[in-house]
Length: 304
Image (cartoon, rainbow, N blue to C red; front, side, top):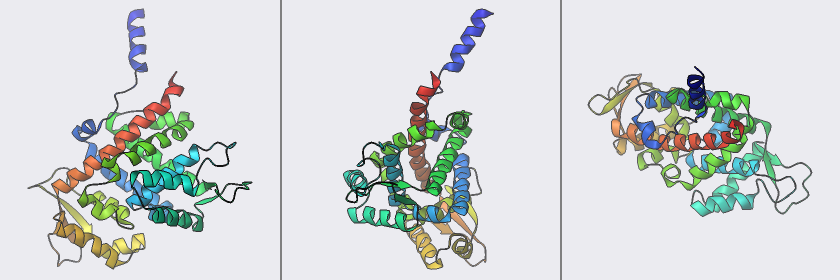
């Protein structure tokens, strides 16, 4: 009896296997969980429309994650640590994720929308240390928690429970994941057909919405069906012009990602190539694998 009890404790104390890209892709539930995650992103947009619109392009997503990681690494005793334009530019330019002009304009936009602010009491106007506002903190934490929930659904893990028990795990994990993803070209530079959406202003929002509308769990004749896609609804929901939305889907149609089944109907039905979905899944698997590695690493001090 004692031996059995001891063995059980040892087994329960072992950390779960980490989710590699290939392990994620082999999970039959992965795409369904990705769709749930896409719906969560739409919910975050509805709650934080200004923030969601601002980071709904790959470049700005990378800039946001890099800036937040810099903030979490700030040393109050060092006025040059944390978010500064120079430090953000160094990271972004190193990996070619954006130009200096893009990064500078992004910080100016964040300041204008009051998503970041000057660090209180700082007298160093040359470096101008910055910090996220409360709304930015909340949005980032909810995004991270949603990603952990998706991972938990895939392996019945306890990541969300760990976050709730020790919120500081988030503070340790976000920089680990951000730094890994920014440095990883497989995430930083999506496949061309995915880039068609996410490397375009607000394209990430439209891609999330599009993925969430796929109605079949598996392709038929190498195609999935998407129902209820109306440009007028997308335009109204996301406050985007129909011209911009139409341009996104025209590019996707031109590269063979999608096609129209009943273009003449009021409510369009669209097919999407299974190869496009596979590219999307692999790209997302890179992100989720990095996030899984980060929370495992960040949880170790709390698991002693």
